[in-house]
Amino acid sequence: MSEDHGDRRIARRVGIVAGVALITGLVLTAAGAASALAPWTIESRSITGLTPAPWVRAVGISGDGSAMYGGQWGGTLYASADDGDSWRALPGAGSENWSAVDSSFDGTAVLALTDSGEVNVSSDSGATWTSQAFPGAPSFGFASVSDDGRTMLAVPSQSGSVPYLSVDAGATWAPIPVPAAYWFAADLSADGSTVVLGAAGGAGLFVSSDGGRTFANSHTSADEIEAVAASRDGATLVASVNGASRFVEISHDAGVTWTSMPLPATGGGWTALDISDDARVIVTANSVPGTYWISLDGGTTFVEQADGLDLALDDIRADAIGRSFISTGYDADAGGWVLQTGTRPASTPPTSAAGVLSVGGDAGAATAVSVTTPLQGTSEAEAVLPIGIVLTVLGAILLVSRRGVAALFPARPRGRRALHRG
Image (cartoon, rainbow, N blue to C red; front, side):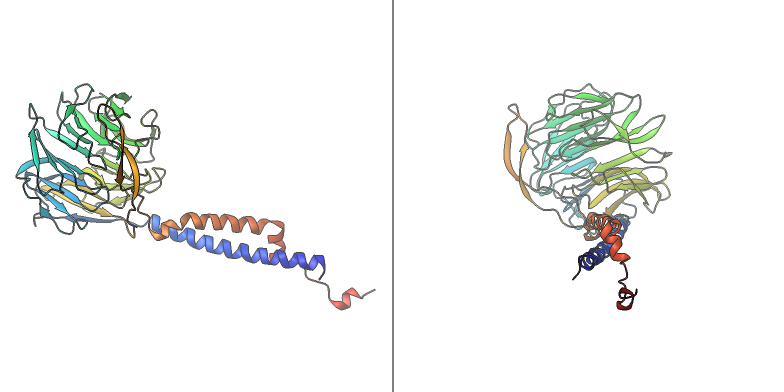
């Protein structure tokens, strides 16, 4: 076999591999992109059998998505274990003006607040409760719980109020060292090390990276902070800012610097948002018109999805893996509050791993605990998207290489008669 003929055989094989890689890559890329843009399933839910459910103002979801919570204003606290398909009243919670609720990653530890200064804590998924009445009966508006249930945040939403923090699963509480303000937003990172507080009237956005011991005002504009959320480690923060202009910002350095995300101007303002633990899935909403905007790439791009009822959306809570969320909004046509759930199509369940979490305390020691490490709920089609991109690039490189081109346009060998001509 001549060297030239051998080179052409090698080039032809490289070309075949390049063609297969390119075609496969394009197919996988298209499938992954289509899955990433697939609409979430948005459903309006009725807790009490009435539509809309009367004054369901407090909503929450466990980190693994196994439990959803809905608290009525002047009614009962409910829980769902099937993405909102059915609901049960939590025993012992009583009839209250429920204003905020959150839980640990697995839903075992639950924190439920009222507008009359009552803090309710459960360590058995809502079967039994311990209640404390706070001095001055502050109107609580925000609740947040770390993954392990040790760190809990209770924040009033009224003028001149002070937030409270517990590092012993709600047994004791202490005021947070920040100025008194009208708090509009609050969140904890999943490990409890980062505390984020947003205030009205230009008071700012306060961030603590040491479990609430010290705070820095990381946003000093004259606008009010409408909503905040933190990733698992607190490095990525998102905040909606409403004032003369309305926008949503993201920080990748725990609030030191902020950049605006590509969201359109809205008449009613960005009223609610949340972020997955890995900071890839961001769900936000505006109140006029009632639409959700969802990002699967950390806020680089967003896809709009209508709520179906044109609600004045008020609150959103998403699970840690970015698979599902629960929200509430006011339906002006029906004259009541509607509870909605959003579920991402074809998502995979979370996995578990061991980790080390800081549980606070004066010593601030880290305690080794078994925790669930949430992973983003990625559909099978989305999982092959990066593979498709790599194959597409590889195929293109091979095709434009010398051997790839030679394989596509091989030199035609001269016939025997031509070789002996002359």
